[in-house]
Length: 329
Image (cartoon, rainbow, N blue to C red; front, side, top):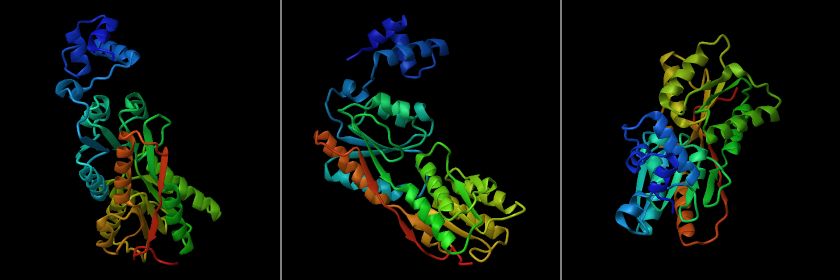
């Protein structure tokens, strides 16, 4: 295993300087930090906090790394992970990847402070995941697929879900259909948008770029997107929000403007968060199996920790949940 002394030697700096640079301590210049980081990269250096400090082979802990911890989508996912982890005598740490490579979540990955990770965080880069993955450190990806040993992709068929949502609007007579997207670097968002596009093409409906608006997967983003769409000369008759949080925010924005749902505009979401059936009108949406996603991912980690052979990809399916927010034209 490469040591920090070897990194310091390659970078031609003192060991203490190398340590400061790799731990983000602001006692070194940006140029020196970059030189040390580059040397560590070239030597494939891995800092292993728990392994070195506690001198043990297993932490009996898993990490669930999420884009942030504030959204209602995550509660069932976390419960699925927690239940399986507890059954195996493991603890769970759920942490936010806000801050990207400088986040606490990134440290759990790069320093291998846990026995395995489940990742649903578009702000963790593919490059970082490729650099940290190895056969003794399983990583389950819920939001992307990369061809690296010891990574497994547990995916929901977001493309098919996006198709179902759009098709349901079309089958109810809508052809002027907007799409409110999540972050541009979100794999799930890209797949839901691909399903939206595919449905429009299947029914020979022209995609209108003016009706593709970003909402960043947040309630506030959904409100903003709704206001942008409502201000246009031609307003769509239906909107597919790429997640329920944005849909709820969009519904609030329209109602403040005196726009009736579904009489004036129909809305469909994605996720089926708990709030979806309590808003007024109740939100029609695409349900994804959040608990099963977390439980499956955790079960696979324990198979990998036992060196059992597993498939590189697992796929879960979505369901259309029809409520009250879509009107037939």
